[in-house]
Length: 263
Image (tube, rainbow, N blue to C red; front, side, top):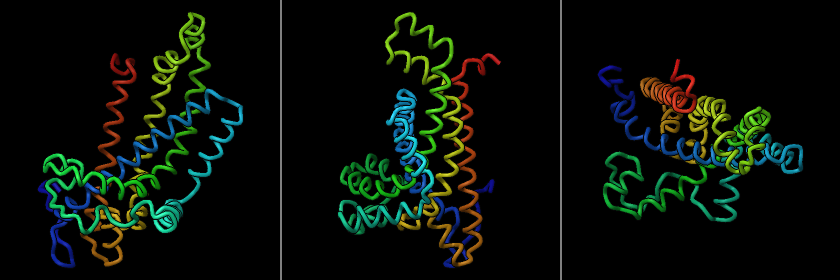
């Protein structure tokens, strides 16, 4: 591992490091896109549910969040393919880029390669292929984030410093931005770090359903072929990525909570 020499595949003799280098960027793109969608949906719906506590908006938001969190990824993926790919024909449902598109990767991150190679025509088809798998991954996580954000915001809204800010005449928007969200962010960030591992696990299923060429798809093919060196390398790559994300979460704690910096 220290020499980045993870062996070779039983089939074809390809370098495991090279295979991971080709597939890991696709998984990172998919997971980051899913995380951004989930955070956006979860934060907005969670804050709205907290501010409209015990109203029909709160009830509807929590119900939708619970249903989306309960649905398995493969069911959401198949449903998305049937509705948006087969019936409506709005979005592509297979692969990462169209086969007819001439793409010679430098970093294998499509957005970065489009910038480095001055090929903006890559971005549109890439986003079209990314929308369905990323949204499929994000919907389940967004429901969970909604409930966590709602509970955290409600807890902070009942604190004394929020009541003091209201008595001083601060606008509700300023109170929400400067006081509530910042103090409610620690448990939310903790959940995001832990759920990133869930997204990595879900990418295995999602990439298989959408034939997306990432580490998850590579892992499934290797398992079916009993190609154990690839299985070990893919599992190691996923574990290291999850560990790095949690290190970033710990560093965010220092930025969000001044008490930790003083300690």
